[in-house]
Image 1: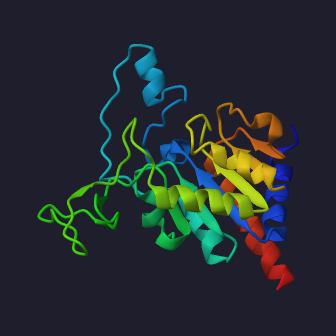
Image 2 (image 1 turned 90 degrees about the horizontal axis):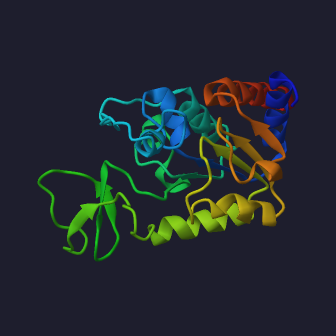
Length: 233
């Protein structure tokens, strides 16, 4: 495997060259904010499968980490076409990512949705009815066995099929249909970059692979991208 610095340079150059960058994030991006992932060495499901306790997580105190901020910086540089996330922790929105550029496939702990018209809004304790149609408001978080939100899923397929660079950040890529997205991008001819400390089913198809921590890869790659753009500009 090439030297880390060389791979980071390659990633920065590919982002610079790309016209349509899509980023896909999983639980791994939030571990550096203090949240546990699911399938990592000490992940929630790893512990469960070993018969160990799965501690409660305090979602209210977590803050975006440098990985989240690097993705928001891509947006600010005009290099983020779309962001697909499996996370419900609200950290992408906290980091400054614009809602119209984000599909949250598994919902958001801070949002509710209307069961009648699918309108989403911030959660308020005294708000039980949709302000648009009067329908019942429920948590937007998708539980096992429930369908993913149709609009977010359709947008994710659409943007995955349009991109020329697809960057996976902190996902094991085993939960479907979310994990369909890298395959859609590859089928469309996009380059695939995976930044994840554990193995994924797409590793052999990746054009660039990082097993290092996200904070060691994404923030320096975006910093190098910014230098490249300054030189070009």
